[in-house]
Length: 115
Length: 110
Image (tube, rainbow over all chains, first blue to last red; front, side):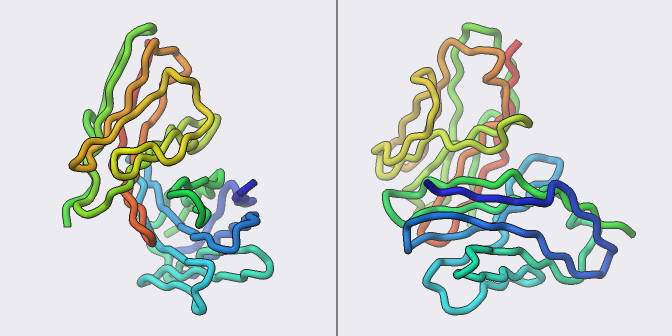
C-alpha cells in the first residue's frame, strides 16, 4: 500500500536562509508522481512542485526544488532564501501510476519563518 | 488560466441534513478529486471522477457520494450529516503532472 511520511511536525528557519522539509514514501508501483503543496492559514492548497518517478532530473520551480532520491524513497522539498510569507503548512503527496489520480498526503510540516 | 472554483466557501448545516458542494475544474482537466481535511485525520481522499465516471474511491461511508457532469464540473453530496462531517472539503483538478486545488468549502455541522 502506498504511504507518505513527513517526520517533522514543525520547523523554524531564519528569513533568507534555506530549509529542507523531509518526505519519504513507500509504493510498489514503479510509476508514480510526487507533489508538494503549501497551505497557508487561509486553507487554500497551493501546488508547488511535481516530480515523476521516471524523471531524470530533480524538479525545480523558482525557489522550490525537490531533492529526489529514488533508492531511498525520499522526496525532500528545499526552499531557498526563505521569506516571511513562506510560513505555512507543507504537504508531501504521492499518486501511483496505475488506476487514476488518487493522491495520498503526508501529515504535513508546519514551517515558521523568523524575521 | 482560470483556477479551480469551489462553492460555497462556507456552510453551516444541522445534523441529519444533507449538503451538496460544487467544484468547477480548470478548463481541459477531466479529473476531479475530492478530499476531506480535518485536524485529527489530515487530508483524506474521498473519490475521483474522470470523464463522468468514478475512477477511484476512498474509505468513506455511502453517505458521501459524488458525480461529474459532461463539462467536468463535479458535485459532492453528503447525506444525513453527522457532527464528525465538519471539515474543510477540497477538490482538486488534475492532469498527468499537476493537480490544483480550489479554495475549499468549510462545512460546519451543528
